[in-house]
Structures are given as C-alpha cells and as structure tokens.
Image (tube, rainbow, N blue to C red; front, side, top):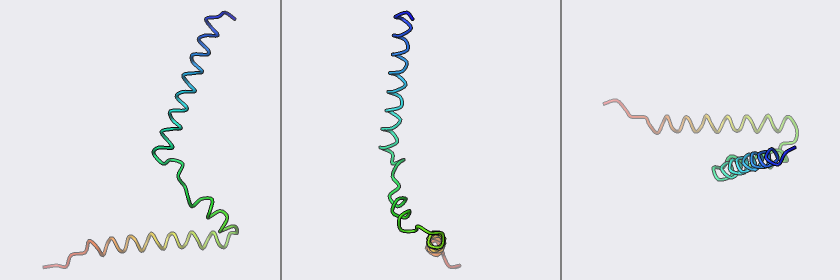
Amino acid sequence: MSGSIITMMIGISTFLGALGLAALIWGIRTGQFDDQSKFIDGARFDNEEELRDAIQMEEKKKRAKAKAEKEKNYMPAD
C-alpha cells in the first residue's frame, strides 16, 4: 500500500471516531442514557407476576394523572 492510502484511511477513521465520540457526548448531555428505574425494577420485579403488577400500577398512575388533568381543566357552564 502506498503512504497516501494509509494516510487517507487514518484520516477517515479518525473523523469517524470523532463523530462517534461527539454523538456519545451529545447523548449523555441530552439524557438519552438516563433510565434510573430500569435496573432497580429489574432486580425488584424478578418474576412475571410482580412485573405484571408493576405494569398495572404504571397504567393506573397514567390514568389518574390524565383524570387529574381533565378535572383541572374543567370549567362549569355559565
């Protein structure tokens, strides 16, 4: 191989590495990797029944939040 090809390959690989590093830093800064409950829930709910109960509780919380928002925006008729 000639020196110019090796130089070009090193330059391109350095550019791609810097691009990957920039994407990683962007992901960390914007919170793309912040999932604090994933590992805790994985250890806490280790069988199917407890996992199913946890999913039902999350759905119940979502419904309660939606209901509270609906009641918050309620305005009686004049």
